[in-house]
Every structure is written in C-alpha cells, then in structure tokens.
Length: 256
Image 1 (tube, helix red, strand yellow):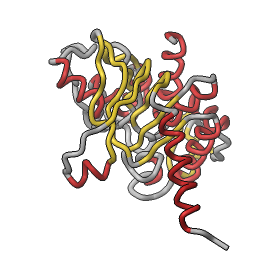
Image 2: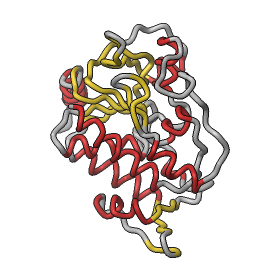
Image 3: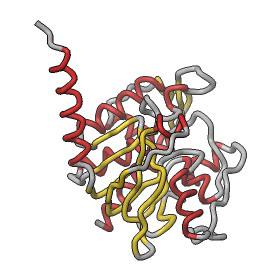
C-alpha cells in the first residue's frame, strides 16, 4: 500500500531538516557550475560546512551543453588530474588537449560533491548579501520561481563566514555588493571590470590568477572572476574553471 501523504511528509521533512541545518555555515557558494561544484567538493572534503545555492533546475552550469550543444568539452593538461580525482573519463585528442563528455563531467562533479558532504539547494536565487563591518557575512535567498514571476515575497537570510560568487558570466553576487557598497570592490577601478571577448589561451590562466577576494570575505571563481576582474571568456575549454574552483577552496581554507 502506498500512502501519498507519507510521501509528501518524507519529502518536506527531509528537505526542511537540511535547510534549517544550513542557516549557519562556513561557506556559502552561489552557482553550481563546474567551479562552484569544485570549490564545494574540496571544502566539504576537508570537513567544512558548505552550502551551495543554484538558481536553475539542473546542476553543472553551462557544462552540460558542451560546445554549441555538442556535449563534449576540452580540458588542458594541468586540470586533467582533477578529472582523474572525480573519475571522469577522458581521451587525449592532441598533446595537452583532453576531450571528455560534458554530461559525464557535470554528473560526476555533482555526485562527488554531494557525497563529500556539501549541501546543494537548487531552484534558489541569492538576491542580496549580508554585510557587517564592511565584510560579507551571509546571503539573502528566495525561490527562483518568485523572481521569475516577479512576486513581492520577502526573502530569508543565511549566515556564513565566507561567500563565493560562482555565478558565471553575470557575477551576480559581486554585482549586488558593487551596488550596495558604492563601488568599493578590490579591483583596479573599485568596480566590476567586465568580461572581454573570447581568447581561450589568455582566459584559462586569467581565470585562475584572478580567483581571489573581490570584497572582504567575498571570493570570486570561474567566469565570475573573469567578469569581475576584466578577463576574456574562453568557450568550451573547462580546465581553468576546475582549477579555479580548487584554488578558491584552498584560499578560504587558509583563512578559516
């Protein structure tokens, strides 16, 4: 016998227990793309309490789409070791260029990150940040459907010691901080520099180099670091994204 109300209670109670236990954490990450998932994995693996909010239904950001909906991505040599750690199969196409299934990569990143202990909540948007004494100390969230429907529904707040903007090209969390802080980001102009046109060779290294603090206790990684600090986009090569996620985790671990 199957009782529908028991199914409903199981879903609601289990979800709410996880959500309530996530109100205070070490790190909140916005965006479950490859860099955000990598960051969450390496932090959770070391025992830190990590909460990741993703506004969309699926995880993986732009990775599942590969290049122009050909579901393959390329990773360069330095990042291949991360593929190995996540048990993502790949083939060497030419020396230094490794091709893999974008679907397998996205699925493996999500699977290992969840199993490492990170809490991931999809369909939730970070719409504001908490700032105390000129430091980011949490986020303000709402259902993505509320945003899409343009409803006036008050949000709720989650506290954390650090926040990571892994929202990709829009760098949404950094934009909120820029607006609320009056342009006091840790960039050359104090403001978001803006993403430049595609140049994969430069962008891959730029992504990693500019994975860093953009405002006290707010870090950027992946394409958000390119947009905030003014680097080019790189297209469907994802090594820099993976290395960026690992680097931001390491930077935060040194400060916790």
